[in-house]
Amino acid sequence: MKTKIRESGKSVPPDFSEDTPIISSGLLESLHLLELAVLLEKEIGSPLDLTALNIDKEWDSINAISNFVERSRSETPHNIIRQA
Image (cartoon, rainbow, N blue to C red; front, top):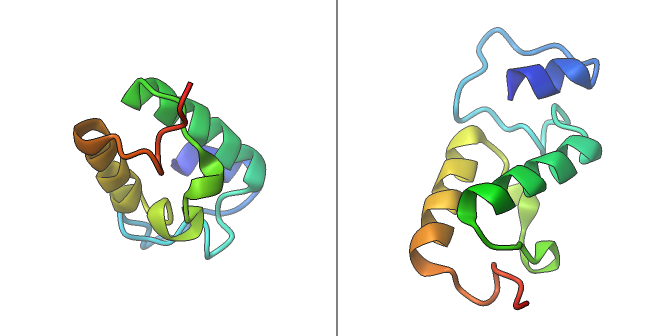
């Protein structure tokens, strides 16, 4: 995640942690969000319906992303996983 932040031309805060807001703070750019979505689809094994997510809340930190992946793996609710 730090690499993606640096790639966007931003500085990683010295107190960066797994709970640091990365979207609401503007640390992560929209292009990197798309890359993250593709990565998460591969990790979960199902396509995501990004229109059904509150990305600012559900992906705003590394811990939030980890929780999203674990929840998606175990529950795969229809509002998170796009029906093929």
